[in-house]
Length: 160
Picture 1 (spheres, rainbow, N blue to C red):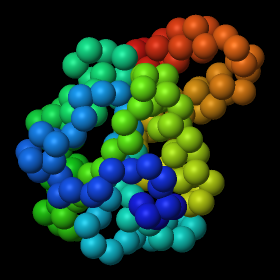
Picture 2: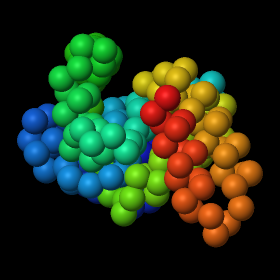
Picture 3: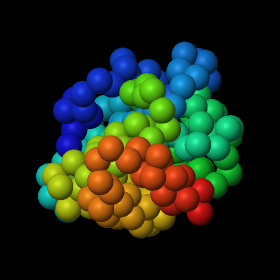
């Protein structure tokens, strides 16, 4: 999957405080990509570095909140390292109407990426892979018409 194949993304912005200020204060999905070039995957090439989404937690429940967290977190030094050693990063997002829609959109993008490359984007850690598998299983098992049930289960996966 190349970033150009992801539908409904906003325009790409260089990852910076200005981009964070322009990001929506709503649930959603965000994608980091290399500004120029691509890199090899197990199968094919991609410019997508990370696919993330918002949670139901207040501080991380918006795209802007998550991007602020990425910009300031010591745990997420990998973003700065990529920018310095590999190339500039850009960010784009897909606003969603609810945390559940954001989670399902994020899971769909991760599945598409995994189907195309036989692996997740390099910035998506093992915990993301485990959560992704749990959510895929949950979505397959949950009957349609029971959104409250799926939302409660997704919250428990995301929060724990």
